[in-house]
Image (cartoon, rainbow, N blue to C red; front, side):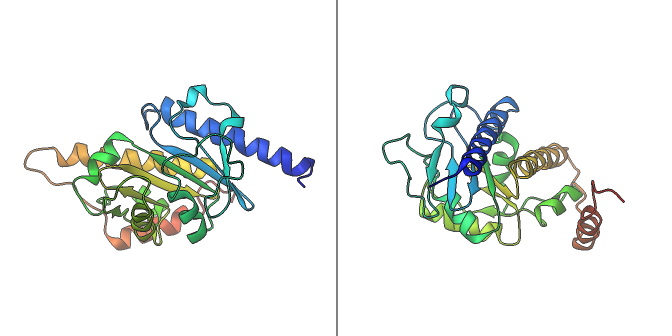
Length: 221
């Protein structure tokens, strides 16, 4: 039986998942009911439901599932149609939060390349050049497999003809990676659209140097 501390932690995570989901709409990363957000709390995953606009959701509408994706309360709301992605990522990583969006510029880039060109050192915060997972039907086990392969050694990837997927140790970290990925894709699209010019890309050594420096970013000396 859950104690007061467990109940308080679940209430906090539910509020954070809902706030993050609403933020994806407010900042233009999703439209309508697209995209989804989840967080892991012990052996429970809390994920946004299917087909409900985020501004109509309350914390109690989030769906609790076990590590295999089975709803803990079958009579409750239906989980997101992208549910297979979430348990798969949690099983394969130490992440505690996932954000999936249909961000415009990142989705556009997913149509054009197999890897996001490293136009900025922010790629280092995602583990290196971001890969594009091959297309598969949304909500399918195949999409989850493709995403896991693209995420190997990374904290984010693009899903071809679909959107973005990022994870982190917190909802803030996962969301920040989504926002940075969308920004980087927008920069590349803007630069690559200049006639007769090609964007300058960072080398692997330059990315590695940035990654090393970023390990201490934001920490007190």
